[in-house]
Length: 208
Image (cartoon, rainbow, N blue to C red):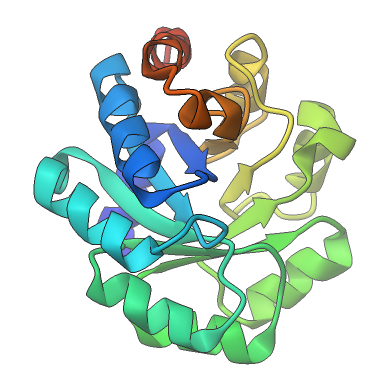
């Protein structure tokens, strides 16, 4: 799992895509990659996630770090990895779901917010803790969590923008998940892929 985790660190930014249709999701990925964002999470709120994952994997191959998000059922873990996902993300902690995610061999991320939930995530052997919704506490909250959990890889999602990306990275996170600020469902629905590319360039332009 180290190689995928190392790739996640190098990628820094994961675009969390909630698209209204499958074709729009694929076009959004194309725009993100053109803009320099290569961490891609296709959420299960998007229609035909397996089809989107397969299309992205075929179009971009190893140029992207591809994953599936908003998993809520064990079967989704199996089908997402079969379609090309290298990492899996659940919004919360569910024992059966996390076990199914881990059984695929993919990098497993699950949502937690409180110290108690972080400890549960550790007990379930989650690879990366998704701090969600990270907007509630901001970078200062993640920095506080790293006090008792210095070795836990955290990936905050929610409230991340190009303007505050540097603050999140300085808080010691392994990567960030960026949704509407980077790739909004409205932009996808309206075909504003140039705007998505421009947002990606803003995120990718933040110094490492």
